[in-house]
Length: 75
Image (cartoon, rainbow, N blue to C red; front, top):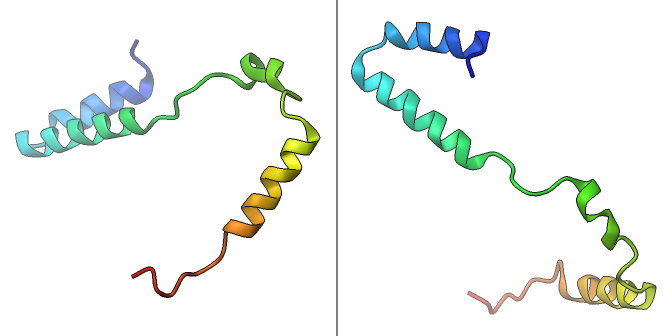
């Protein structure tokens, strides 16, 4: 599928030296790997409410107790 942007990138790349073309290729591959992956929220909406309010409270308490604390002897 070619878009105006793809066509323009190709046009710009044609004027670049080989090594710079390789760098562009590596960059586009890195971008493709960093693209968000997952499922749409609508697909997991059925899980809403699956965790009880009591469990959520316990999770929140555990996070509050275990986070933002510095152990100066850790290093």
